[in-house]
Image 1 (cartoon, rainbow, N blue to C red):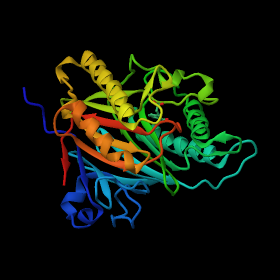
Image 2 (cartoon, protein in one colour):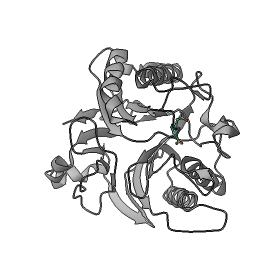
Image 3 (cartoon, rainbow, N blue to C red):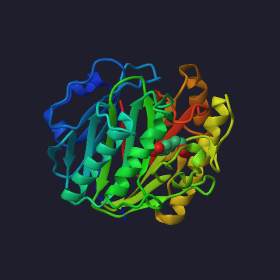
Length: 343
Ligand code: 3EB
């Protein structure tokens, strides 16, 4: 049985190409995250948009990640959030400056908590029961301020918002990533659905929500992947995945080996997804990858290892970003089950 027309579609294109698109094209756009340090794409205010200072390492100046949806869409704003929604999908983006001070809490912790509270408020009032994916970007992720590394500050604020909304912080939490940009505000993009999402864990890795306290006072609140069925199709959203086995980082100073270990982890998540949804037959060669690389000089080796591992041409973009542990040189996210277009 051939599946119905896909609800979600992913497209990657440059900011200058985005500027050339017609209104018809924009009608079906859920939102756009544009990566690069140049000036941002000009996009109508009704389209959720963020410019993220993470330069592409693929020889282009910018790359825009565009989510399309086949459902009739309408736009809205709530506080700092710009969102766009269809019958089953809601995508939103929010930028939040780190400008609020409060005794005992860092501005980033405050910004993260406020951002997530605002998102949960929106999803509760609009009735989207599950978050499929969060993308978190903020500068200086490895820098220590207020006596704590900024990634750890973020984890405290994020978890507090989950708890404030009575949401579980273990098991079946949303898939996510958290990367360091070169500049800018805290940016959170998210995709939520009126559907059941199954959170997947990786047997090779301790669940992040159970990381021991050596990684910070609060464990990160994310699952290794989110699996769902939408419009008759199984879709898989794999969280940022690094060279971590158990809870330990492996292959210090070796970006190629870290890439292989990250892919071993992604392969294990794909296996877990196929156990859960056997008909989906997710396959490494059919996924679309977004690769975050700490040092630009590692990009060629990382790209080569990824292609070797997958064993066929790979749909991938590579971005310059900081990973949330200083020893990690690469992080890879992936998704599958939706059409993807590169141009
Ligand atoms: C890891 O496995 C690497 O804090 O949202 C990956 C995916 C990572 C998501 C997050 C962090 C996050 O711990 C880092």
